[in-house]
Amino acid sequence: MTPLSATEPDDRPRAGAILIACLVGFLGGEILASVLVAMALQFTHYPGGFQALAGAKEPPWWSNALSLVGLWAGFGGAIRFATTRGRLRPLPAQWRLRASDARYVLLGVGCQLVVVLAYSPFHFKSLNQPVNHLFGGARGLTFALLVALTTFVAPVLEEWFFRGVLFRALHQGLDRFTPRWATAVAVVLSAGLFALAHGEPLQFAGLAFVGIVLAVVVYRTKRLMPSVITHVSFNAVAMAALLAQRSGH
Image (cartoon, rainbow, N blue to C red; front, side, top):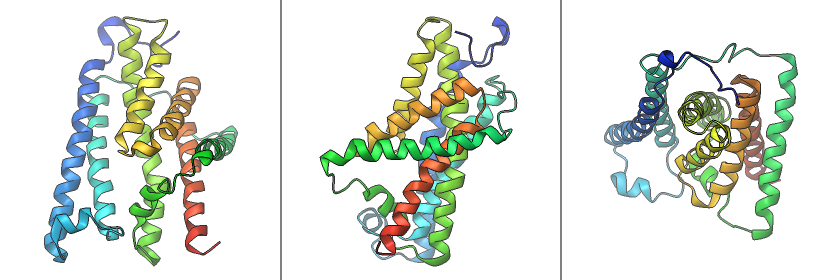
């Protein structure tokens, strides 16, 4: 199979260095998120500090927003390294929007339905806990801000990081050793890491499934916009369900 971005042997992306940068970016983003939250705790004089915040069922909106900003800053650093010193070239027209991309809205909705149906026989009561914890007691403008970050900003940065960089680096690296299996292994590994990064064991299988779909979309289209649209649509369905829950429907 042809790699996602074929290059001359001496101009190949530095796959190993990029993968290390992704790990450092993720861990660095988590550390930065903790620092930002710690600063906010001092500024707001939050009762009980970190310990109380960690155990809060409805954490303040700013802690979740700052956590996302810190993590995404780490993603940005990894992306920057990959596209400069890592020599990972952008996919041709990766952000170009086409009229035919509307079908990926349906794909995102379909993925959400598949996940819901797959989990429904088990009747997990805590399945929605991560979403409820993320939004906590947010209301009004703060709730709208978190919805916007989760529905639109998160898919762009996560697709750029996990599919635009991590998946492609895995694919390029594996293609040197096992060309026949490079694509399949890169799809599965990147999807597993995507699910693992969310830190939610109960949701791991569903997130891994979505990660596989998104990686295949990028591999087949050679663009990021289709996977971003799929991801936005997937998240939007979850947000619609949350809104319905909060309105009592």
